[in-house]
Image 1 (cartoon, rainbow, N blue to C red):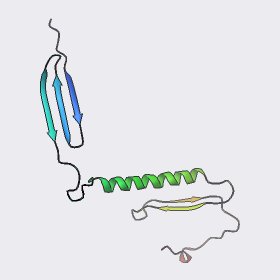
Image 2 (cartoon, rainbow, N blue to C red; image 1 turned 135 degrees about the vertical axis):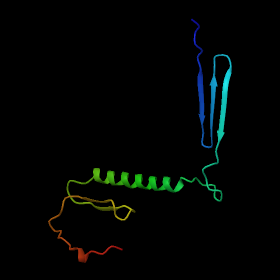
Image 3 (cartoon, rainbow, N blue to C red; image 1 turned 135 degrees about the horizontal axis):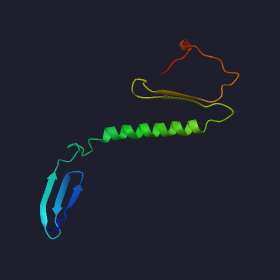
Image 4 (cartoon, rainbow, N blue to C red; image 1 turned 180 degrees about the horizontal axis):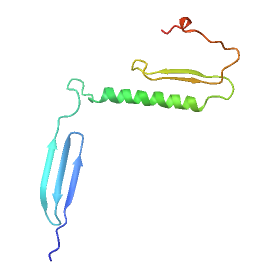
Length: 114
């Protein structure tokens, strides 16, 4: 019984192209290259994904900062932090330390946000 040939598939996946080669032990069987337009704006040359990437980085930075703050709440005293998301207040977090005896409750009519 004859021994089956061994094949190797090589892939090159880039930002603006994809290449593939099918190789046998002693020769090239097939080659393929596909190029794409760059994913950037024609005017500025910036990435089309820049807005999403910047928003994702901002969300991560805020989440990490809140996590560090929550991890370092002091056992005595208090820390006040109100985190509000840009999506119509969909995600609000309030970190509190221990409530002091001198604090009093403020009703909503007295609170004003700018």
